Amino acid sequence: MGFDFNNPFGSITELLTSLLINLGLPQPLVSVILAVVGAGILAGVTLTTAGVFNIWLERKIGARFQDRLGPNRVGPFGLFQGIADAIKLTLKEDITPTGADKVVFNVAPLLAVMSVVGLWAVVPFAPQLIGADLNVGVLYVVAIGGVGTLSVIMAGWSSNNKYALLGALRTVAMLISFEIPMVLVLLVPTMLAGSMGMVAIVNGQDVWFLLLAPVAAFVFFVSSLAEVGRTPFDLIEAESEIVAGYNIEYSGMKFGMFMVAEFFHSFTIGALFTVLFLGGWRGPGSETYPILGLVYFVAKTFFMYFIVMWIRYTFPRVRIDQMMALNWKFLTPLALVVVMATAVVDKLALSQGWPRTPVHLALNGTLVLLTLGLMQAYARALRRRVEGMRQPEAGEIAGAAVGPGS
Amino acid sequence: MTAMQAVFLLLGLVTFISAVMVVVSPQLIHAGLWLVLTLAGVAGLFVLLEAPFLAVVQVVIYIGAIAILIIFAIMLTRRMLRDEGRQLNSLWAGALVVTLILYAVLVFLILQEPSLAAASQPIQAESSVLLADLGRALVDVDRFILPFEVASVLLLAALIGAIYVARPMMAGEDRERQE
Image (cartoon, rainbow over all chains, first blue to last red; front, side, top):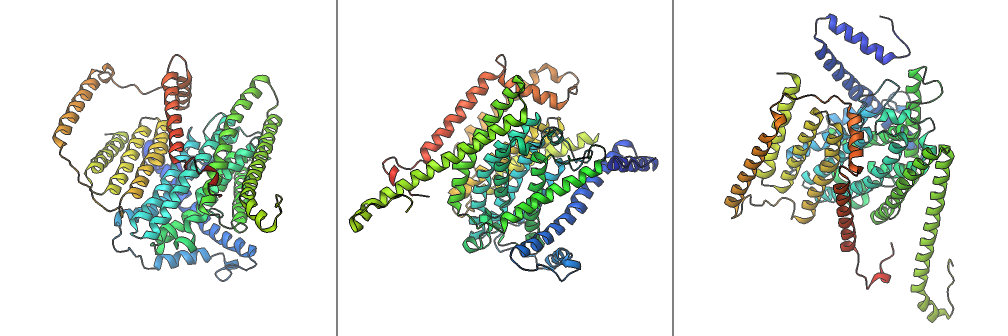
């Protein structure tokens, strides 16, 4: 059997299948074994390596942002720091606090990692390389996110610690709030591609959806940052306020699992953003050489991951009321408007035969201008109200009105 | 026994046991977590029936929203989240009679269904085609548009009601704290 370099993963599968069948195993068992092996390689080997590498990358880049060197002792450029940390965490004492609910306490970190790794089942890496091309891929992403929320609640409650509980409560409030604009905005790529399947969405992006729906992409990016609990939305573990949040009582590798889940989740939203808005594996030449598609996919994902880090090391944390106001007064209404406007305009463009890209760009430009105008008007009204409160006082003291903006 | 049947039995067992535990477990939070497992088991049954859309919707709505809201409500209202409620009150005998009657009626109705006797036919169509059909059926004038719209209006009313309840007092409106 020849090795087809244009479809390396398909060839490997064929090779292994024929090998196992020659050993005398029945066909259904072989496909089950191959599925388990494939999932094991993806989840166990690739993702763990990527996780360790990501932690190194993040610490290194974060250090450069802060004018430091970062890890540089273990291995070349400190590359093996992540492995050393993992060994250290494994060797640490595994503490279960008194009065903790043992089963729930131990299941929570498992669920946290599971919810992140599960997302990769529907991510298309390259033309033929995808775990499962569900026709409800987008919805699946949302569903798995719910499991992550559950793990936070379980961890916070079972720890028998008030800080953990407080952290869990505010985390869950944040996660379920930001899920709303995220789910709404996920409808936009779904509508544009005409399918919820990840492969169909990638195939539908002859023009990247980032160009067709920049506002939707922005809302998705911001709300998924909040879903991960990345700065500026890292109220989950605001050290100064709730010590460490829901995972305060965890030690050793169980804490490590929460940490890996968080790091890995921010890498995952990079991958999801790539698939939904940046054309996934598509790029020049990726149709003929699928392996090139994998390169494009990884490059785009790491670029988005870099942006996530960039934001993390640039912006300070927002207060919880500001964050809720951002969600309910800005992102959610904007997402609603974007979904409705995109639906109407896309249908019109299709039926009237208008060119799709300029129409959508014009729509998004109008939306941006409208939003900015509304925000300016709101800011003015707020300022006027503040002035109105201050006016009599200022008049009494100085005898002169204070002009706006002074 | 095929692999499918084994998986079905396993899922059914998990769903059943956890459903019983929802009612039996004395701690409210535990009951909530068992409820999550029950709902996940039902989602697994949907997957076995080759209805991935329903399975995913089950997880999104029931686990992702409803179960979490229930647990959230317990967390906000109960003292230390560890108080244990009694399982039974004085009306348990009446409740038992009513549930038994309901069970009998359900069994009777299901046995009336003629397609049960016939050998089950696997659905031929692709699940994506079925999904598109479901979408059209919800907005088709001849099929389910009325229940669909009624449900939408009901949800809208609930939404407006929630906003009204959560609103600060009208009188102090202009003094509302600046945020």
